[in-house]
Length: 77
Image 1 (cartoon, rainbow, N blue to C red):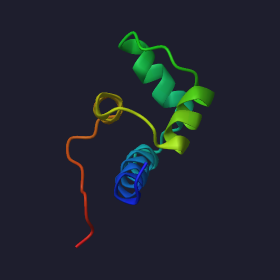
Image 2 (cartoon, rainbow, N blue to C red):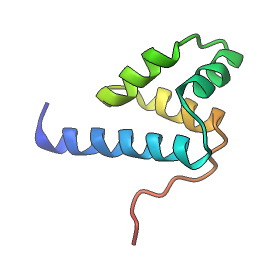
Image 3 (cartoon, rainbow, N blue to C red):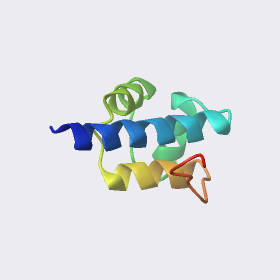
């Protein structure tokens, strides 16, 4: 993977982690919320997947939606 792709992969990972933390949730909470949609992931699997940053855009949006994120800030300026 090239440096540019890695940069954006890290950014997506950081955004998702920050949004989870902002809502005082953890990976177990996320697993429960995803389970309500019929997506069965363990907290451990979610932790590993997010730590790698190698997830699809669909997974990213799904996670943001189930935790209640309505907007996402891409930059802090």
